[in-house]
Length: 77
Image (cartoon, rainbow, N blue to C red):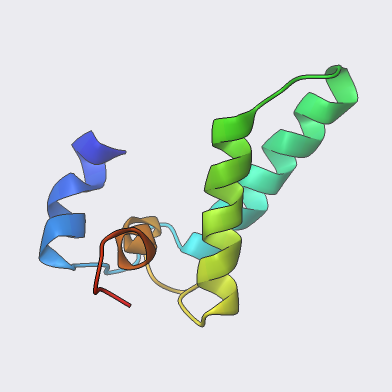
C-alpha cells in the first residue's frame, strides 16, 4: 500500500479510486472467509478492517483507501 498510495498519503490527495467503505467491506469478506476455513489469527487484517470501519464512522468512507493516513498521522483528522 505504501508503494501505491504513499505519495498520496503524504500529500493528502485522496481522490477516490477505491473507497475506504469498499475496503472495509472487502476486508470484512476476507476475514469471514478466513474464519470459515479455520481458526486463523489475522491481526493485521483485523487492524486494517478496524481502521477502515473507523473511517466510515467518522464520515471519511468515501475517501480513497489512502485516506487511512488521516487517522494514522498525528494532527491530521
